[in-house]
Image 1 (spheres, rainbow, N blue to C red):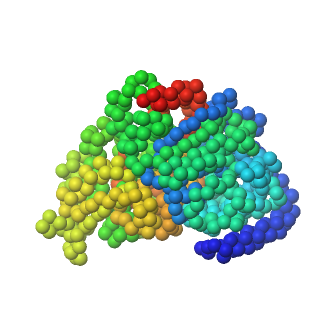
Image 2 (image 1 turned 90 degrees about the horizontal axis):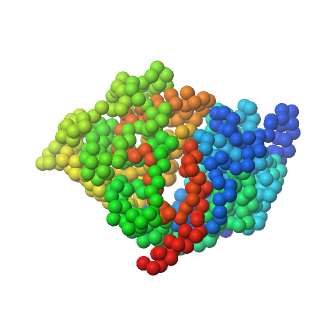
Amino acid sequence: MPSGMLFTKALLLTSGLLLSLSLLASENDVENNTSTPVETVHGLSLYNSPELPPDFAYFPHVNPSAPKGGTITHTAVGGSFDSTNPFIIRGTPVTGISKIYDSLMASNPGEPFSLYGLLAEGVRLDPERRWIEFDLRPGARFQDGEPVTAYDVVFSLNLLREQGNPFYSSYYAGVERVIALNDHQVRFEFNDTESRELPLIVAQLPILPRHYWEPRDFTSPTLDAHTGSGPYRISEVDPGRRIVYQRDDNYWGKNLPVNVGRYNIDRVVYEYYRDRDIAWEAFKAGLTDFRTDARAATWAIGYDNFPAYQDGLIKRITVPDVNPSMMQAFVFNLREEKFQDPRVREALSLTFDFPWLNTNIFYGTYRRTESFFQNSEMEATGTPSEEELALLEPFREALMDSHHSERLFTDPLPIEHPTELRERLRLALDLLRDAGYRVEDGVLVHGETGRPLTLEVLLYDSGLERVVQPMLRNMARLGVQTSLRIVDINQYLNRVRSYDYDMVISHFPQSNNPGNEQRDFWTSAAAEAPQSRNRMALAHPAVDALVEQLIRADDRETLDIITQALDRVLRWGFYVIPHYHSGETRIAVWDKFGYPEPFPAYAMDLDAWWVNTDREAELQRRHRRR
């Protein structure tokens, strides 16, 4: 990418050209569109109609009279940050930055995938899904007072696709072009008319201020408190230590139905800590007041000798997961030749002794994750259905070559492996021998090359060492030469971006409506894209085809069947070593918050919480006395 003045000039010229083309195109498009008027509506939904009527006053789960004020201080674990620009490859982005941005429409946490007007007050979707148009609210403003216009929307999409993280070019690949029809009307034209999700995806586009970013180098990390149009503005940046967001009293959209009863807390703070142990001590000391408790031991016994908890000053909340349980896993780097044989990957997977971990470390609180879409109708179970086989059959030869087995077509899921460790290791050694390895003087070496099988796990969080080490010990019993490398977050990101790793831990969160984001997880195009989520570098024609079919599914039943077939291909490929899940989110808070109950059906919606400022002052006095 160009930099400095060359970058600025190029960006100005490009933006000017795009704006001119948009204006020229809009004259013809408006003329061509008058013959077939499309109804303007207040909301969109993936398969059905939105549940809330056009005149809804606020989301059903919120407290419209929630008080304003107070502070919420979160724990951010992982070292540091060096950029307030989350949209680019370079730098380590700060947590919570999405709070400063508005999108065209906002989701309702009480519905699976429905959107209602935010920056846009009305929307028109072509019945054949060739285009979508948004009417922007004339009163919409950025935090510096400049109006939000259709040209900002055009600029945002083009900027993200051309100079942002490669994820955006993939995510918005179905958009042919975006056109400013006038100051307050914008149209997205699609080259992909079969993706039901695409119109909703563009409705969630974060809108960046053209007047701010146009003269700046978007591709470079920055710590500037740049402007957005959202409910919060950046008020303090302490690099690597904390970021503070202040509620904008002049927020243009505070009285919109999608915002009433939300964004109640004045200050949102993220305090950074290098590891979980330090963060836990900070919470106990009252330096932070909200934490998601991901460590089973802390949740099980950590509060037993915690005086504030015993005195009722700490609340613990469990929120059942309503989305598929997230796949967290050790990920093989398939760029390494030694991991390209599925028998090697399956053998190494057998060394992960979940029953021992769950008994000795996790206090029996977890369940083993087996599916990439666990606890949903999209999870593949049993033997393949006729519909799944019809999807897989065109790729039988390629799948047989890549998986070295027909089990994908014949055997049931979940995969039946021995539960007892000794038997698992015996099976693992048999698989490694089938893959051409033998043990020489206690070292596993390849029979042809004589090279030992080595594996290094790369981490940035020392808290996961207790999960990694037992597995590495079991691998060593097979003769694998193993190591664990823990580095700081910046070095970790640099190594991941340059594909310099054998194995890392990665996450594959899924919603109840998977779509375009699946390209970034699994496809060949994402395999070599910097910072994609396809950390294993998976590139398979069957996977590519299934992802595209999934995106184009036009009903729920078809989506489920395609996703089951994809899940089956991924699981029998042994591309990852799955971890575990609890089926709930565990939260601990100092008792100063109010929140609406019950929680909405599809998300907790922390934006609907508020602070009891009298209770907050009482807790602050207590902390000062200690």
